[in-house]
Image (cartoon, rainbow, N blue to C red; front, side, top):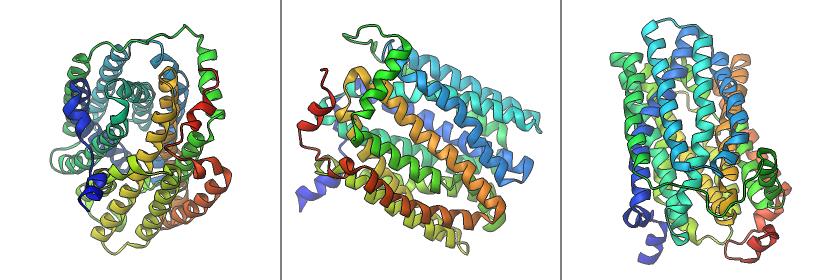
Length: 423
């Protein structure tokens, strides 16, 4: 019994054993809290200016285009330069975009195009920052601790999504948008300091490649690896069909009537569940078929969201169901990322992490647009329920389309040999 509980518990040994990983973890935790305040503030500001869920949803499309464009080159860059220097640059540029949001909030009634433009710029920079950070982690911990490091990173992100939106909603309600955005700017200082303390993360033993050939090499690997590609497809399907976050401003202000403080609760709820899911994710390191874990977890996400769409009578019931959805999403994400980081060679990690980020971030952006359009035609609760049902059907489609993902055995050494014939 004790052994089983240990398998469930989150392993924090990477934080204890790796000083470099500890620096990166703590700095990013502080910065993420500020960043998640901005994640709440921007759609709130757009909804207050326009009273339109569709225009909040279009915020996702505006961010999607630069994110995809920069993601296509981000992985190639991350695989050929000092990742530490690249992270320093992206953190400074992201702090600059948050400073522009501060100016827009002080302005009072900024044009919608200004908010869209700054959000697009931040998305493009994040497209470079995220895969660079993800590709750095495997070089900071031992292979044995990789799954634990992935779980810790996911837990880190979800802690930010819990604290950031909750604090953001209170800050917006009490002292306004300029202070909310200003907190984001200040917290970037911790992330910059943490990256500065890392040792150089230079490419090791890699021959120079042209940007095009480097990009093609990454996609060639994915073509040979349906185990990883299936995980991407599963997450993209779930987020495009059922991501509900663009509907939170309308639900908070027009359905639950709880104002910006309640809006912060809705944004925080999935993160609360994801933290719980991450804390109990130790079993993933011992799962024989992690691909099946991904599909089962996404099905749980879909069911929880469908019920959330019906929970219009109580904000607390809604928060509980969003937390359940967040826990399921955490399990899915950790299992997917563990599969990728285990099978991907270091020379391709930056490129594959860029594709992973494109899916993980780009999917919700498309989901925002879908949710906003459906809500404008019908209602916000209807958009949530329809998304959950479609996601359940999509789980079956993924199971049939990617049988390799369903069959994948995590302990089989043959899997890696099959996908790396040129190694």
